Image (cartoon, rainbow over all chains, first blue to last red; front, side):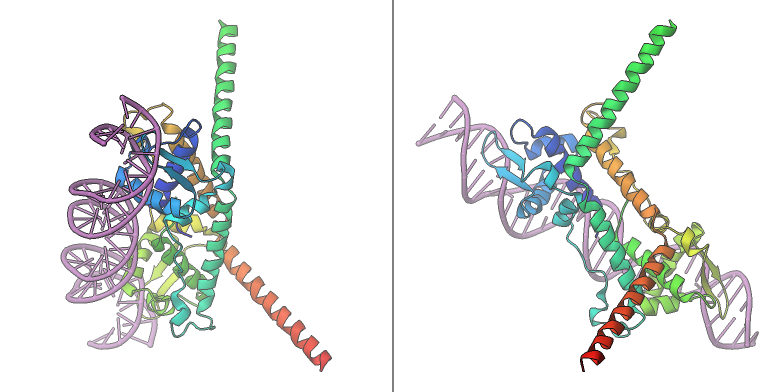
Amino acid sequence: MRLSTKGRYAVTAMLDLALNGADGPVTLAEISENQGISLSYLEQLFASLRAKELVRGVRGPGGGYYLGRSADDISIANIICAVDEWVEFTRCGGRKNCSGGERCLTHSLWDDLSIEIFDFLTKISIGDLIRRGERKKADRAAHLSVVSDEGSRAA
Amino acid sequence: MRLSTKGRYAVTAMLDLALNGADGPVTLAEISENQGISLSYLEQLFASLRAKELVRGVRGPGGGYYLGRSADDISIANIICAVDEWVEFTRCGGRKNCSGGERCLTHSLWDDLSIEIFDFLTKISIGDLIRRGERKKADRAAHLSVVSDEGSRAA
DNA sequence: AACATTTCCTACTAATTTACTTGGTAATAA
DNA sequence: TTATTACCAAGTAAATTAGTAGGAAATGTT
């Protein structure tokens, strides 16, 4: 598992797409504007996302991108893996001193952790994030209204 | 939160240190040999780790590095943060279109996720990983003995 | 049919980060 | 005194990230 700025751009762009894609496709130009990412870099990222069918492109005027499937069926791990391909870290496969010996323990421990991080990110979907954001927004609104109520009562 | 190869090197090196540091300090030369990381790169990483007091160096012959504190008190997040410093992703602080408006929602969603990943890695210590490894090793051994028992019974 | 818009594609490049190299100095055990 | 080790700094090669440039292909609009 890897978590670089490239992966963040992709997650951020997918979030933008999910949030603004309710009524019709979203153009990369819009996402570029919204998120401050160059159009061409977005094109690269979306080529990877499209290859994994996480997004679906529609050409021509009025075109743009849709999510490839429901926001609940797209995990953060899906997105990161699409753009930031999984690099095997334990390069001990061919290395001396490392075949089956004690030396490999460290590598396998890292591998286990890496899988655990992956599992963690697999369980969080774009849909989850959006719902979480909505809940927080609602909480803030409720809190504000309470505060203003108390304010008016005190006045 | 960021999870690059640099962070992996650091976690791997710390694991090596924890595993081999029971009897006396471990030299960077040993870790370099074990893990296939250049000595000088390790020096760089350990400069950062030492700055955060995750390791303690002892000079002179017979010297090397100790863990700075108990393996249970060193989280993966500690290690990664030491070498791979936290970069703020939401650069919308100064950007137009992004101050308080809808545009920022995507960023704050990413931020929330980032914090969640951080919390997750904070809860996993070097000690945890090692115990997990030992348990797995024991499981394997137990399973092997069962298999060989059944083999002898069948014969 | 012509045009504008958009995805889609390729090649190149600047900037940044990663990993390593070199050549030291300082502390310390033998 | 010497060997060994951490510690330090400057430079560099390799890889990755992010962006540029210049298109072709599809498609809705006029």
